[in-house]
Image 1 (tube, rainbow, N blue to C red):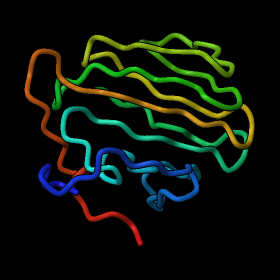
Image 2: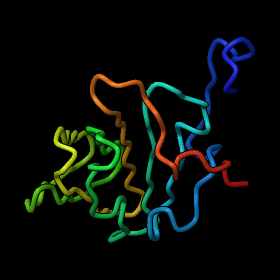
Image 3: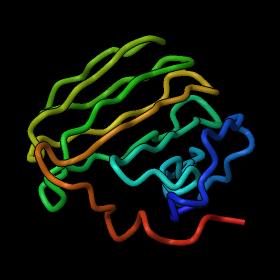
Length: 138
């Protein structure tokens, strides 16, 4: 799908059609959305908790990438840890982290919690992180 001259006008997929990477998010299903669709202008991934207490995303910063990130809980309930604070995040909650140096992470409070995350470096041409260029899981 990387060649824009052969790309279809659109692609639709259900969350269960997208493979998940084992070990990418401990105990949660980490779905490489950007790679699945061949998106080249921004990073986007999804994590789905198998059980309450699953880590949707580990505590991390984006200093190396320079990315700002926008998170959305689309199903369930999570708790974010952002800059040392805890943010209650029921379904429909957005958490935006502009500063790449701010440490952020999220834990599912319910099984089946789904978190969508979009990120890129402001004002720069998007380049995926090294981990985001691996082949899709089978």
